[in-house]
Image (cartoon, rainbow, N blue to C red):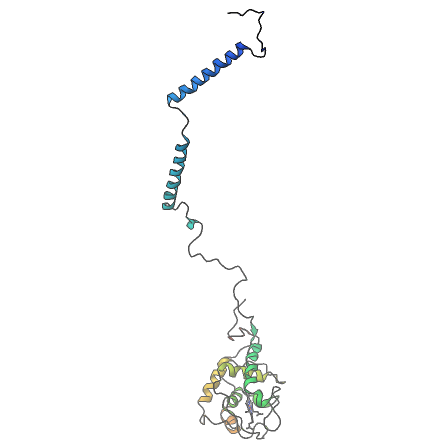
Length: 254
Ligand code: HEC
């Protein structure tokens, strides 16, 4: 059907034929969509998706826990102790040469036990207490020296003079104390023996002292020359041996 040409559309921008075509196409599209819904191929419901998510979450939790899927055990071994970094071990005090280590111990015991009479310089007082500096008994045979310390001394001493009576010092004295004092005196006050009286020797001295005939009495010059004019038995030690300064045991190689 054709419209008379002399009465044109007032709105010339609208092309009726085209608009009609659009309307027909849209309608067809609507009809097509509707048909898909009818076929049952509609997009899955959002609620169904959420429900699936929840189910997966719970199932994952249960199965994962049972099967140790998320267990840290595979990454961290039980009772694992980390090996300390090199150089971080407790190596204890620095080792000291035997002579220095024994002297350090001995100097303390000397201060506590001998200082009061023989003086901090070991020189005595020239009248009631004899000198230990450069004199033959502390610097001579070690058994004689040990017997004087442990039992005290009476009567004339090395120079024939009687200074007084030295009371016994051995009560409560450990082998370590005795070894320390003897080593200290023999290398102090100008004395230059430089040897170490070992714990072993000191132990022997304590035994010898306990076995004396007149145990309990201070020794005399006669007894010393008769019975104790010798060096103590026992293991010797190179004064340069490295020791643990606390225990006096040989130091472990660094
Ligand atoms: C209470 C004072 C006193 C104390 C403490 C003492 N002494 Fe003596 N010591 C003497 C007297 C006194 C004599 C001299 C004894 C005599 O005349 O017979 C002597 C003598 C000695 C002698 C012999 C000296 C010589 O020239 O022949 C030695 C070695 C000695 N003492 C070492 C020591 C040592 C080491 C200690 C510490 C463990 C010590 N004494 C603690 C008073 C003391």
